[in-house]
Amino acid sequence: MTPQQLTVYRHLHISSKPIVIVPLTLAGETNAPLAAMVGPDRARPTLIVTRQPRNRAERIEFAGRLASELLFPIETAAQQTQATGSGPNARMRVVDAPQLWVPNPAGIEFVRTLGRMTRLRFIVGPWAVPKKVRDLGIWLTWFAEQAEFADTGALIAATQAIAAVWATGQSDLEDGNLAAQMAWLAPPEGMDVAAAVSRAENPELCPPAGPSTDPTFDRLFLEPALRDLATARNPAAHNAVHRRLTAMLEEQMRPTWELVWTAIDLLRNVPEAPRVPKRWEQQRDRFTSFHRYVADGGRPQAKRDSAGRSAQRLAELEQRMAAFEAQRAYDDPLVIADHRLTGEAFAGQVVEVDAARRVPGLRRSVLRPLVTVATGDQTHLDVGQHVYDPTRNGQQAVIESVTETEDGWCIELELQNQMGSGLTAKPGSVPALGEDVTYTSVTETFVRRRPWPTRDETPWTHGGPPPDSTPVVEDAAEDWS
Image 1 (cartoon, one colour):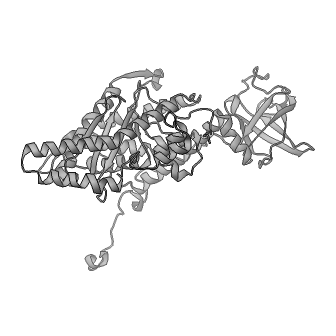
Image 2 (cartoon, helix red, strand yellow):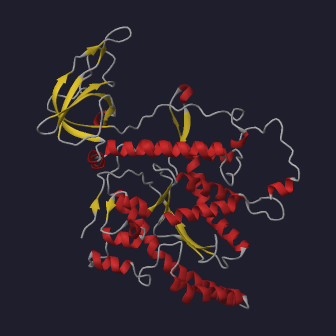
Image 3 (cartoon, one colour):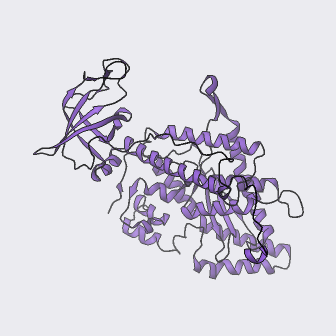
């Protein structure tokens, strides 16, 4: 039994200094952080432990210590910038952006929940918290929001990153267990895959990757330690129990810490896809823009998005997902093979070429070469549909005809762009006779959407200005109840 590689390339940027967070939460409590192992150094992680997770002050202290670990690399990255572009399009961009890694999607939810708990706290007044706690909440919320996008490089779940490259012999649900997933890819020395997976599924031998802990560990070790910590009569006894609790939690978290770093190392060994650097530049631009917003005193994110903001965010999610899937298909032959199986792409050999063909234009004739491709792929593409050549940076073509033959189909294509501005095509811009080519209907370019309405043009029901008059309702309190 061996895992199978799903992609030729890794479609994810890996930072030179990733920051790993392994969180634990108290079972049965909402947003009660118990501990976190965090840091950019595999050999020297920082362990943060909450003495009493149910206590509000202890939670805030936990957030403050975590803020000390995360805000420093964020600020350090923000101070190292470079100029991009020239003239009116010139702008500053950070040289590198911070990248957070957690063991699994539940770790992303931990980041989101902790951000929600801290970003709306007051920094003045009777219930004030340190400013760094609120700043941590703002940044954690931003990282969690970025994790929703398919092309993100800001907050990564190790199990999802591994599953995007390799298929194991277990279900998707079982792949959610980082230890079991890594047992397929990097079993312990001298142990076969079956034995490694069996070991990984035993919580006594391989603790869960969190944030939830093993119920047996909670009952036999964690609850007695927390109870002893709460009833300790003097500082010496209290410190002794705290050291015992810290040692137990470190023992639970260290295996997961090592697994996340092993996953990062495995992914680094997979070559990076050609379009990954461009997406990372865009991620650095987003980080630069948000840091500038925070530095200028920007307000924390709202509890919930307005209707208008929700619509814009949904549109961005859909657009970036479609662009990411198209870029993966253009970069990776194994990904484009999936589209060939679904009929969204075809591959074949060029059997006819008319590279000098011209058609009448508005003012003069324009170059529109014809290319005929013989393919054995079963396609679901229609005449008049646009298709794109991944090897020529998405060169657009229009299907002129589809003819069935004894060996498959002959598809005639009219090339539309990327051939130069003259009446003769640039060398290499038109496929040569006998060349193997691939075309797909998947595209990373989009028709520009209509601009979003301004606030004054938005109905009041969706966040726009209130109506000129509000009807008076008798007994309003009873009506709204």
